[in-house]
Length: 343
Image (tube, rainbow, N blue to C red; front, side, top):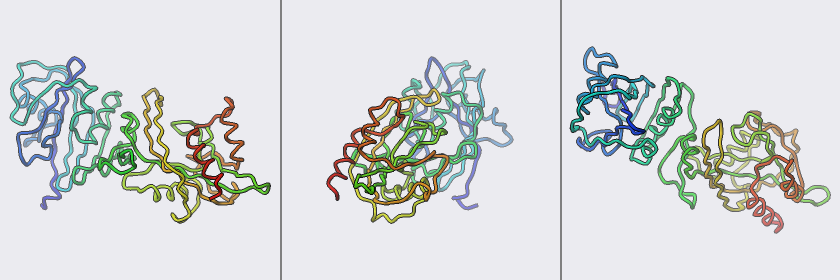
């Protein structure tokens, strides 16, 4: 069998005590896929072992503890260029015995809220949140290329991945899952595109969309003509062009996008009872286009309706507490100044 096709079965266990996880800093082996990472304890199945037998043996060998109470939480498929590992994921809060030194690295009890600050695999953050939220048994597939997360699939459904961004919009080199980005408040990129035209009376009009009632954030609120997160690998212009096609059914060339400016917005709220920390860096564009709403092909999952509105009317309505919107005042001011110049 070629090395790139190598697969194996393993167990991975996080022991729990006093609000901490027992974490293993893997430093002992030079050629270890987990070298310098912090993970749980566990290892490969031996011949004829069941998952529980492997779990009990590996925990005893690596920690000195004998498990008395544990839970099977999920099955994680961990893939790299050379390995496909099927990990039976456990947590355990019952154990006896005297701790020993681990020949795989250093064991340390780490407060659960500090675990995500360690050098852990980016995909592990997904299942740590699932464990924290007491999600029932799950399957999670994580694919890496050169230690960068390239795919995440939860219970058979693909998850969105974002590039983490520096304040200037450049990529840090880290790819993260959307939910993790929003729970941790990590900076990511979005594209904002404003459709603009002149009315018959000479007024500047902008197209506003009403967000779908099914949106997890700001449902039924009026918003930018078209906007969306950049997916991992996207550049801002390619993301903008894709969002226009998906949300409004418009096919346009990148050259038609006029750069207005940058807008950064950090919002703290709650979605489905969970903290939602949205730190976005938006590249704002204008697309000059005179198109009627009925000519557009709306993405119903995202957009309820669109309508043209005089820019000044839109600015005035933002002060009306009865008008539900999620427009940003600083961005609207920047847009107004750009359009006033008549570029």
